[in-house]
Image 1: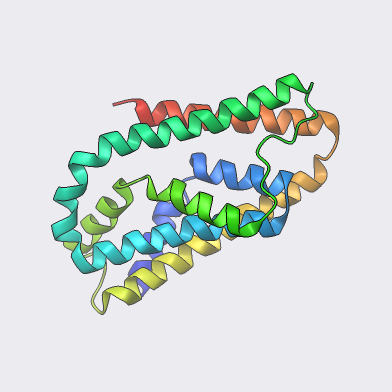
Image 2: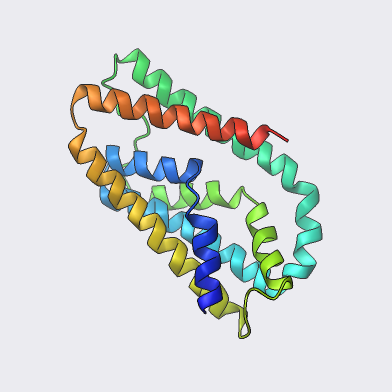
Length: 195
């Protein structure tokens, strides 16, 4: 169980594009929407941990050939989200809300899908399991611990984003956070495309 929690934190804590999106979404919408987005991400991490625990040694070779096309799709989705957010900000003179999702279930499904576009997560978990770092015991315990650790981190990001959003509610604050957040998303998208 401890190994699963460590694995979940190790995959979740390095803040990438998904983490930035969760913070932005929480800052611009509501904490419920941000938490739902975070739980969508954690669900994907838990699902990949379960797949790796159950069949990681058989899945890793199957995932590698499709990793590059999925990486390109993920980068394209991130670019579209960032460009859309930047365009909305610039067109409205900084008054646009950018990424706007009103319903938690929509946020959950969107972030589950975005996170599932990263097949390297299952390779990561499979490598841990094949290397013996996953500990002994049922695979579902490892997966549940990975999900719980990832969920705690994603919820922390969402609540932190909400706190930042509450302090930056003015026009200038929305413009700065929108420009910075969307620029970071573009940066992470370009990094996905780099060899």
